[in-house]
Length: 75
Image (tube, rainbow, N blue to C red):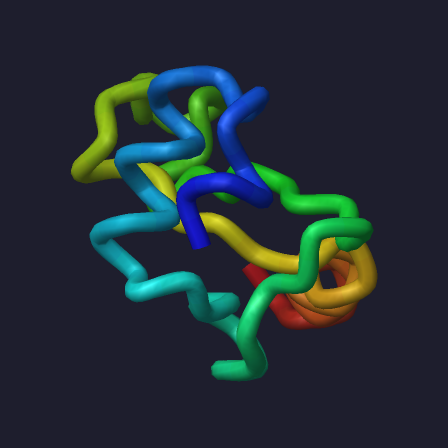
């Protein structure tokens, strides 16, 4: 896994290791060509921060699904 992702920013590399190379949303392994997004568990607009403990990595299309669901859910 390391050689394929050696150009990731340090935070994404730490999160990728923590998640054992899997998307936190769908559970599939990330592949070298995948667009990997950071998702805030507690949104920054609601006081969340960019700390590792507040972030998960997800595929780009999974990130779109997460935000698509949250926009249709009642608040």
